[in-house]
Image (cartoon, rainbow, N blue to C red; front, side, top):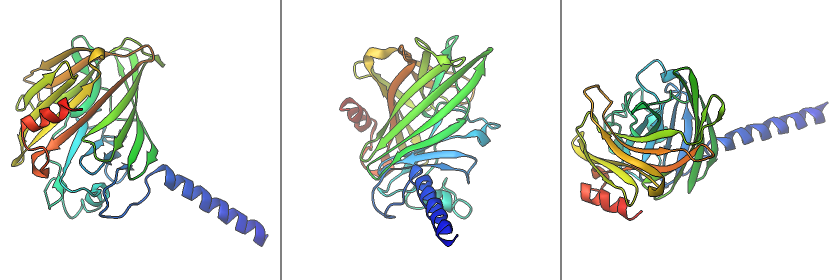
Length: 291
């Protein structure tokens, strides 16, 4: 019996270790690293970062609010991971205030934020709802990868998106591979959009059709920030700016269609003046041209 109990304990410990490995292993507190994890302590956020950028997406518990499949930028100016620290101290120090590492002044609301997708129907973005499922695939100091699943019924049809996001150390853009479905089947040739909010038209917008990128540059909380999305120019149907009097509805879009597998690939990210490396709109456009 004692031998059987020992074997059971070993099995439980092994299983617990496997569960932990499917999330994100701890790293040295001040060492540059990628990081990605589910955040149940803050209404089901999912957050990811590397040494230069950080983001979050909204989960099921946020569905009653304005948020949908838009992506939020967390502006950071340190190389080490900040996700766990900022969430851990949110009851005593708001991450909307810069305490020396960065902060979250970026408004998403019902917009696409920085690189959020949507179905392009009747000449407008139809975002899918907040994600329904999340899965960490890989999490190492050099590279993290995870999957977010989205779904929404629109005009009697159920659209889905399975978004696989990869973030690597040293890069200002994360990679996305999205597969779309319609009524449970692969949705080939489906019109979709990749968006950047212009924050009700306040941002300066620019694009490069040859390189396949769109970008915004704007003043924010005493500094300036540039956001961008990029796709294979051969896959892009149109780059389109939409201006609206409705809050959070003004965007710069990449419009494209899914391939025969229902998929698209793109990148998105930001540069923050306060972090020091990207300090002007010209710097940001030069960075994108060199990608």
